[in-house]
Length: 57
Image (tube, rainbow, N blue to C red; front, side):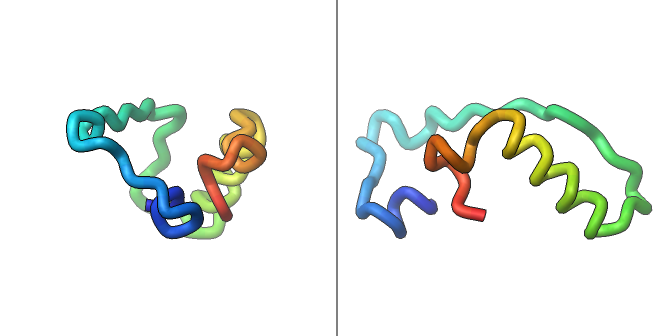
């Protein structure tokens, strides 16, 4: 969605179901939202997803 909003890029119809993801870490159901956000930021930094344009936040 971010690519579409930012750059007007839209997936070809045959590629719209090609999204893949991996669970990198699990958290307890009682984990604070701030801690979840910190871990998410950690993985974005490790995987360089911001610098490669996969995440804007």
